[in-house]
Image 1: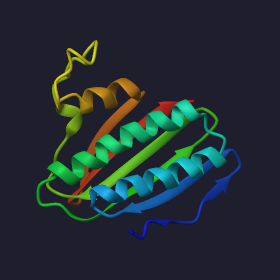
Image 2: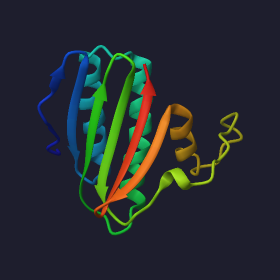
Image 3: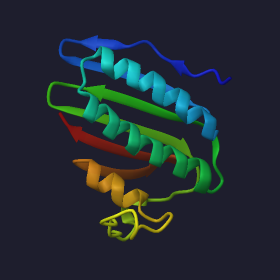
Image 4: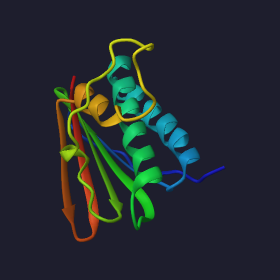
Length: 148
């Protein structure tokens, strides 16, 4: 069992914020997803939006675990929800890698036409209003935004 620390929730009128630290292990992603779903549900975020964010973050966290070069330490997430949007910021230490620069892949139109792998970033783009990247002080910073 992993110790997933959800830090104190900050309520600022209609804005809610959470911070999470996720160990760099595949099994920790499920624990994080459960905590996130609970927090967002209690904040009144629609189930479809919660599921979209969970899918996007699962893809991004799994990519860090499986592909990040010279990675170290836990992955850090900040999630903010307002009346208009849901924003998640992912920060992790590793060599610079900008997934927003990956050429757009075409999403399959059916299960039969789908190939294994290669569409995760396209899916992230399709499910978010914003998908941005910065590299600062040895850390990768990803930001995704979903409209409510």
